[in-house]
Image (cartoon, rainbow, N blue to C red; front, top):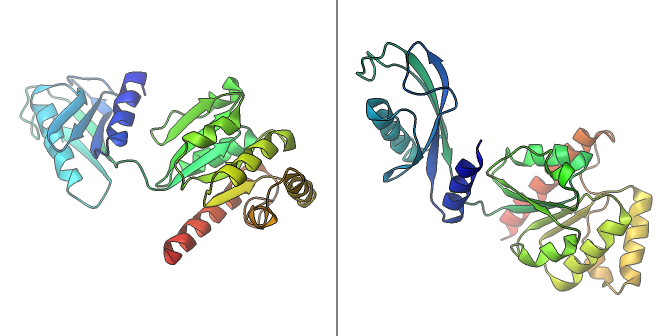
Length: 261
């Protein structure tokens, strides 16, 4: 995905504008565009890009507008440009239609971009949530795939990002270690009222972390709400299985809060 395309998509989502991305995924024979060509379509028509102009683009725009009115979020077509579109080209194109909905109500902040976070974020982008990942190391943030659900922030002062987050954000601290977790969690507990706080670590690390939070003046009732070790009690210590256990816990807490609201 090129940068301009991602900017356009992010702008539309932030403006609560539903749209459809149409991507040319295959070409056989002669066609007016190459594989990878994209357009973004809204209710009023074309918003960005081209898949060849003329009849094929008009048909793609109409199909995208129809998808916006349906419950399903994906659609694939294969059109013979001569018989299906009415063009003189003799080629066949495959087009993938993907509905992009406005920003999700479920927001998750991932502090740290290391091995567990790499797996965690790749799972979270598959869900209906918006993710912010914060880390001081640009080389680790760059490992993440570009995705319209993911915002990456590179800063040495990670706790300063807390004040920019939505008050209902789920906070996960999966940083490089205790010295990084402590200031983030202390700030999150004393200055905000986030609905979920989780930190990675063993049982022994959890005891040290909670003791240090208490020493720093954090109320014990707030400390009791911390999920540490983060995640559900299953799986092994591999990054991907830890990430799966974290996602399971996040989903459980999200659904429980929906029931109680």
